[in-house]
Length: 202
Image (cartoon, rainbow, N blue to C red; front, side):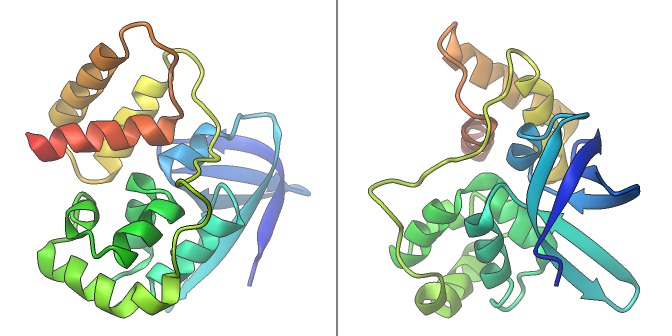
């Protein structure tokens, strides 16, 4: 297993980054919130999980070890593969997922594109004893905040990667921006969750 990669961020796109590790560019798939903390040219140490398939080797990167652990545990549930696990972490923090599973909050789980009511029930049943309870008093969000307006593109691309249309994603971003109305910009993870809530209501 590749526990982490450490090196210069050579490139960053809407769904992943390339980390230059001693001259070797490693492609790492990440959530939009994790990507928000990576700047091209900066040095980064990214906790990772390697998913091996017959025809591919895919490296997934995370904001911290807790997020990686949650990613791996989520995949022990029937029907949850790496892409869906990553989508779950794009919508909820690890602590929020622990809370949702412990409280059997199906509404929170079905906010993730690709998870219906039956899927949420199965996840609760299978992961209740594996994920454990929330850590601390509230769900921590350790992801780096976005700078000024770039959050708009990051959130929009995150929504598109989760399966929403460009039109819906743009409308959700505009609605979130209207709610801010000059207030201090929250972390991208929080903005993404706000946008998803607006889409789920619509």
